[in-house]
Length: 117
Image (cartoon, rainbow, N blue to C red):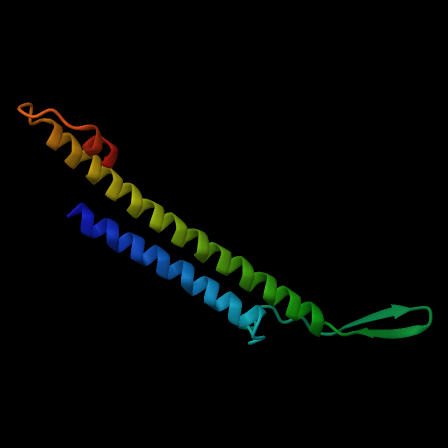
């Protein structure tokens, strides 16, 4: 039972990792737009020379890309944690099976069988 769940966690973790890497590749290399989370309006500054309009389009783009990268890094780390949890479940199951095999006292384990653990 733990083996199936362990392999399932590894597959889910790897899928999360590939999903985040693929999305970041599409956005940063293929230049696909991200979802607009931040929308700042153009700003007008009053100076001694008059009113200066400061366009905020570039700042919107940078903020949205930064938030997207932060979210994808979170998904990437969550996938790594899921895969690590699955690996630990499989490792514990393998150690448990190895200890059960060692309980058979009629035959002493060979060095090769101990290396496989």
